[in-house]
Length: 364
Ligand SMILES: Cc1ncc(COP(=O)(O)O)c(C=O)c1O
Image (cartoon, rainbow, N blue to C red; front, side, top):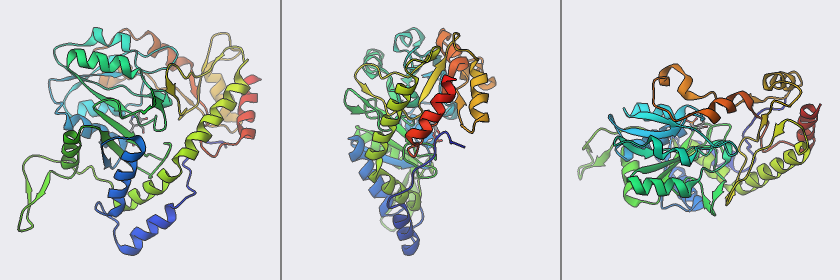
């Protein structure tokens, strides 16, 4: 079986984790927690990083840090993994869904303004499958209407927009280190911001708003949360980050090979790298068009029967029971993409021979 996307563990992971176990620093305080935050913020060039137990926690923390709550609306794509949408509900706000672009599959910035009301507090773009959203347009709209921007960069670590790391352009950016992500800590996440005050507040909220009094007692001025990552996982994160540039290079080279092998296949649309962006191609994905000899679902079955793990695109969230009554823009593209898209194997360990094997099956 060629898997969809597996973690790559080949550096100092064992060494650093062993160090935690040997020294008994396994819990949520420790030098690797500080180091991972420090290394990460330097890597993406942000002022502050706060490590969390997963990407969903980072997104919830972002919303709580910005004070988004009941009565507020947050603009988000419906074509996404459900996590960012759920976190909007966790804080009591309502997601308002906006369609995506036909070619990049990220939120269509031109459809955002039409959905803004006096309740809108933030825009939450998702850099889907690695392609950055049009951040220039989004930041302009946010400025005009005095809105926050939270970037869901969980799938786009390694991607750049105008030379900047995705996740560092909005007010807050969030990443995931789940097992299938570019770098992994098993489970984990990170919040970054260039605003020192927001960064301090995020750290404070993530650690039960704990203040230590002079005599050592804990004092809590307001309700806090435990979103912390244990030192033992942060140790893994430090090791993973040491190899990230190599992983990005391989991902991009693999995407290039897919593009070459599939370039003239009738009925297959390839992913793009549009505008001034660098796409990490976290999940290399294609569209199966009407003039392709078999249906998208038949292709999924064919790949499975040949030992290739692939996955259909995300089902539109505005069609699912918890969100079917939420406000949404025209959803023409989102509804269509679900029926046409396939994620193909995209692990760092993927070899050219395997890419060719996958593409030969797609070519017939
Ligand atoms: C777009 C998106 N947002 C958020 C998440 C949540 O991250 P986590 O699984 O670490 O909570 C994921 C994936 O897992 C994702 O793909």
